[in-house]
Image (cartoon, rainbow, N blue to C red; front, top):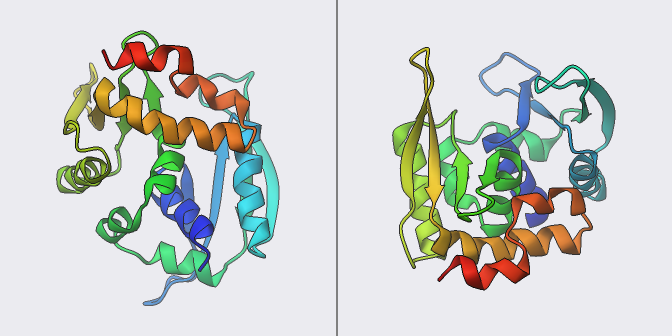
Length: 204
């Protein structure tokens, strides 16, 4: 399988993708759908799928962030490549994720603090052990400092896990995320990255 496609599918399993089991059997087959309020990013994902002969259909829905906002989505048919990733264990997905895939996941589920320049990667669907594996992967790429597993506690008692990426790590990771966005003309997501003029300042 083409690695660009593989990393996209891995990131969709962890991020904004919904893998739909089309056959409730011992060996299920999968299609995938994904949506976001950012049309540029959906179009980019669609180009990767289409370039690998995976056909897509468009759909729109109202965003949960406000009734006036529209989410742009794409869905596929059942495909062998999607089924392979749909059947994988989460631990194996994290193990196979490379920096490109991690950037895609961050663009789905990550955020940047605008002044302190640390990042958060939300891992709501992962167990504690799986989130620790994500932290291990980040440390393999950026051993300057280990990221931290934290929780966002809500008033109703719910807790949502996320990875806190300190600014020294975020500064290095940022270079990869920003390059992906600039190279592919996804300017509308540059707000999730540290501007070049502030990068040196952020690691001091």
